[in-house]
Length: 182
Ligand code: GDP
Ligand code: MG
Image (cartoon, rainbow, N blue to C red; front, side, top):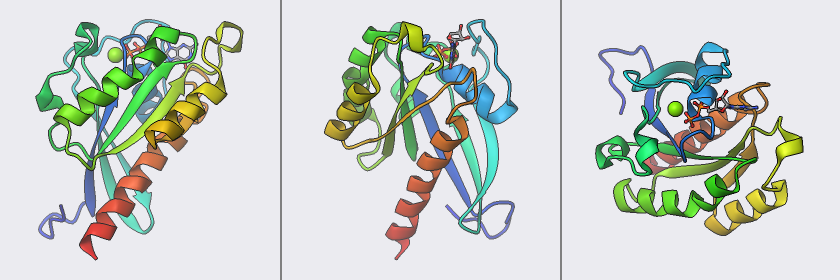
């Protein structure tokens, strides 16, 4: 992973955003990388990934964060998308029970296509819409515990926990890569 010739960064991590269409994956990415939000469905066609450089535990880390580019509309993502992924964020919408019920389906897709030890995390997005909530925080937490994932609720709209969720997965990926070097 390290390239001494171009020491522009110490690590390059490929992260994926996965989840049912409409849960807010593109908005989370836009909020994190461009600090922007739109009320419209963010049209991802033609945009495969965004880059964010961060400094973590004394390392320059380049995050290459992939969005599904509308493939999620077909409920399944081509297996090439998963190739080489270090971390996967599974997103559901706390106002959409069906998106929460689909988490296990996404998990089995990941089991099928991603490398076995890929770091995963569960995110319940749109936590600003408390009045329309259909999935309690406790349910999200319990599912994450059952699947042995870290869990966080976010709002791309209000920027709640967005940076924290990307930093958490980056930290976990970094930890794992350092452990495997030792
Ligand atoms: P994707 O299909 O998962 O990429 O979903 P999008 O990012 O395109 O978002 C789908 C819709 O949800 C859009 O209308 C967004 O404005 C809206 N949305 C995304 N994130 C949030 C959020 O945190 N809060 C609220 N209230 N709406 C959101
Ligand atoms: Mg999208």
